[in-house]
Image 1: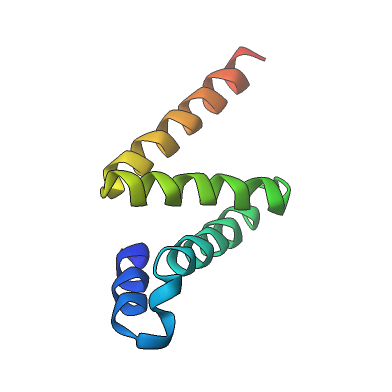
Image 2: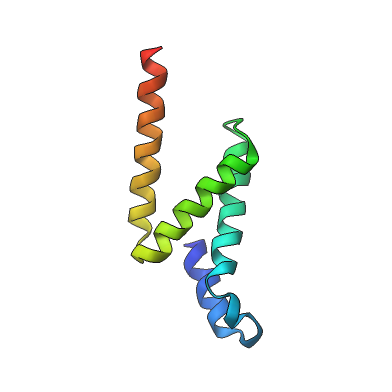
Length: 85
């Protein structure tokens, strides 16, 4: 939802039109990193990079479901790895 709001806002504001992709990707990635580093404890830049990846998936697929499925798959792999040890 945040990506869509930022994308539409950037497209509608004349001064932000050139940033219509970069702005939502950057801001949602920072939000993702902020939300996850306070709970998970992984390095901030690593989580920021994952946020960029998920935002790019969201943009290219035009669906939040794609990024959500990838996030769930990542969480499942981490959970299985933790359970094995």
